[in-house]
Image (cartoon, rainbow, N blue to C red; front, side, top):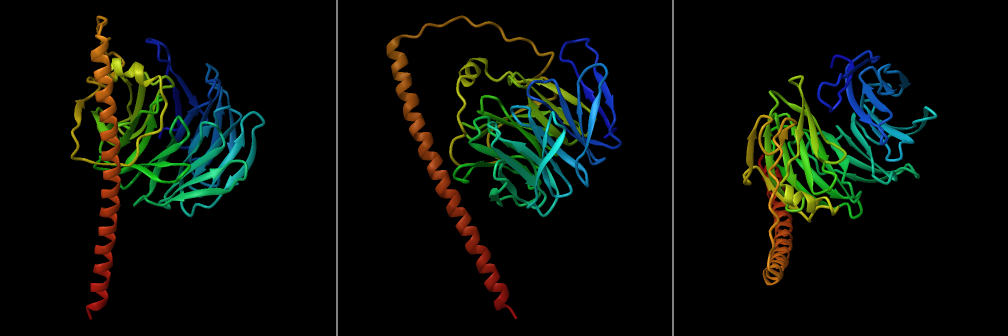
Length: 369
């Protein structure tokens, strides 16, 4: 909000860079894939591209006619996309410093816009309560997702590019398949607006930041809440995993940036990093799920000063036991899939019942003189 950009070095005792140039609050920042450039968007209606060194030189793009809410580089670094309160999404050429085209079907402020990992699609989230999927080459809107009950604050692609997750002012996070446009998962775990989210590079975890001052880590494979992290003394406004997933950083209205060590169960984590699968089918989660609370930076998601876990002794397992365990795991997978299908059917039934009740209320209201 002080219109300054800070670039922090992860090495201890290293100086941070403080860049000035924007004339009003900075709303968003994004490093290029190579790390050689840094983009920022501001309430001053401009986007600046910075060279993150001691000099801190920047080029300003007169980008929009209102506040720029979001800026994101394509995976090849050749272009970047911006979203604004002027209701448009714009795509720019990075090195030629040139405006390419505009996407303008939203009817309210656009809070966020992101490229897909392959750079062929763009997804945008808006205060018109929709998430829109765009084809970059045809510049057409491929699909509009309208299930959010309020402003959509943030959206991002799963690392596999097969689905998207969106956060909303209705306290929910929703995950959709970008090919079938089906709602895969719905999480209602926060008690206030969800302001940001980030996928772990493995694609198996999602972290969310909310105005209820907490961060929550979700296991997408099992469709459940893993951890709730308490650290910020006010709304948590933003969160992001590092490129390797070893750390994540969160920012809040308390003027703090916290860097946490992911520290997921180290044994599982090695396995997790080998695969990049899209999430399981529909899982509808609510706040009464079992969860593990961690106060402040210490805990499972530890802050940078966390203690390294003890090296573990290798354990040999007999072959018969291994095959038995594999069989049990296989059976559990079948059960999990069955439960997912049942949950999906139950959700559809609940939706239909809700619709029937709403229709009944409307009929009653009309019947009453």
